[in-house]
Image (cartoon, rainbow over the protein chains, first blue to last red):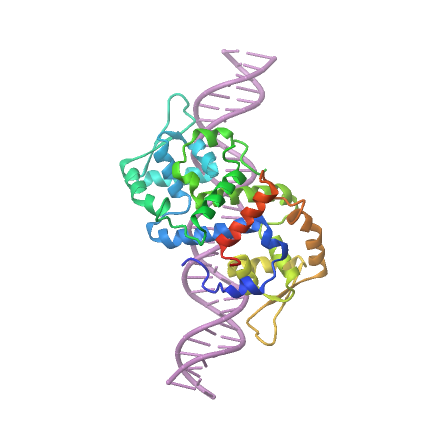
Length: 156
Length: 156
DNA sequence: CAAAAATATTTTACGTGTAAACAATATTTG
DNA sequence: CAAATATTGTTTACACGTAAAATATTTTTG
């Protein structure tokens, strides 16, 4: 599980990447692959996919959020949102509600089971014991986070 | 094309992400989505997928590289590598060579057509006119790149 | 050296996420 | 208000990438 076992330091040293090694696009994709590897190392058993905890987390913070708003906030496409929310509903983690004020939309909130799931997995996701490890100092990690937020167009 | 047209600043302001907004895993995924959106805005017409130019670029810099070494360097899985290289071959961009020294392996090099393709698309990928735009200053972008390299385990 | 283990790639079957078309409801406009 | 347009979510068909098993070759080991 996780990183391809054949990944040797050799590939990093022997292969000449040229300017690609400075490309933000390339570096971001590699970082993303690393995050997913680490995610599955930690959550492979929980039958949880990347993004799913984030959805539940944001429902926890914003009870009754509209499905489309959640999709936008997490950069998840509506079609995918539908499938995942339906599975959450089948698993009893999430409740869908069609409001009378706008019967096209769907409001989402966690069930008690969903709240328990979030509470149980929070420590593995956010904070001290997060799944995502690296060799950056605390200060470097904070700088990286700040620059990524700016890159992403969050904050002013 | 590109970003979901329904993405409003509203989603950024109205939705409370809590600690998720500080999570490197989340920020990296969002950044990756942004990169891909920008990629398709620029290359949608060229019938080129993210990662494909990188493969050709590294073949250009490392003629005769072993297929597996290329896969490791770019964090691309072998199964996917096989498919893509075969398509390159069908398109006449890449030449596969089985060396007598180890007839399990495959050596890759660009054809003249492949070299021309790389030369033509290089400006849109790397350097001044790259597809990947953002609001970071030059210095911030350099810092971001440096931190990502460290995060990825390149260098140091 | 023959059998076992390791390596490099390919094949097959599948899971995740997406675009495009669709359906239902709400809003705007003439 | 009726028709046209916009919004919200769902369905369908498909593309991309992957895990696991298979294939072919090379290396190791008893």
